[in-house]
Length: 376
Image 1 (cartoon, helix red, strand yellow):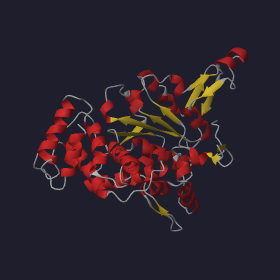
Image 2 (cartoon, helix red, strand yellow):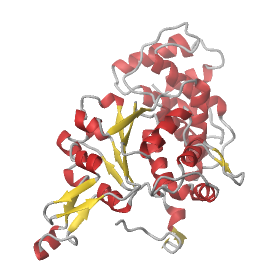
Image 3 (cartoon, rainbow, N blue to C red):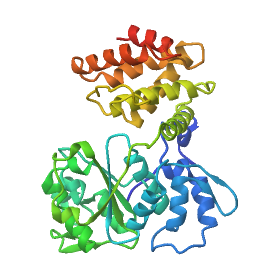
């Protein structure tokens, strides 16, 4: 079982813990929305779920609760994708969220777990060094030596805790996990059982248990999933935002939320600069200008929506602390250059060509051109 801090009672330097953490879990940040959705949710709920599938989709995409309370959108994208993802978790198949970097895979995973289980913290971070114990279980070796194999000496993984409690377990970057460790999931997902041979016991999953994994499109071939494991997952591919307006909306929403969480000084609306960042990223990402007239070389980086959010947030900090309190071209230019030029040789050539052939000639962009040239 997980141990948690009671934020209503715990304090740090006299302030409640909930007010001092940098980033609250989704189930804490949006507790009020989840509560009103649950209170007015009269549709069938799968065993172990806190909300019905329809209410989970409303929580993700936004809308109204039964009492009229506005539910903020957590994901901006095709509704059908979220419906398929939620429906998958109501079956015996696990969910694999696949996409290029910055397509909100982790964000969606966290909010799905929060809405379904009320707990998004049962997380395994996949890396090349992730051991099997991170998915199955390990041992407290001091107790193991003192008393031999026992349930008290066993250290459950997040997946094992999710099985025992009937909750959602999350595995980030599954394709980065070594293949033999990946395959330890096969029995868990197919039999819904985790044997503990050292104790002659097993843990059977309670109703409500499932797994959400994420994987990066660009990591294909790192540690490809075996066909046996892939069959246990239903894959939902999260796309990059379809249009510039959709991407601008996503960036604006997330930047506003991050600004509040980081307690940055409130700035006037900066729609023009957000649109500028998104336009640069989309044009270089797509290899063509927005009007389709000029072909462009693409840099080595992904230039994802997540990176655009980071560039604008950093620009807000610059404007608030070192500028005049208004987000301007100079505040975002350095961040854009840093996002684009990952390879100092090839990417620098791409960026300079873009500046001279597109930015320099674009009406209303002279301030950005000058700031970007200074930042080279």
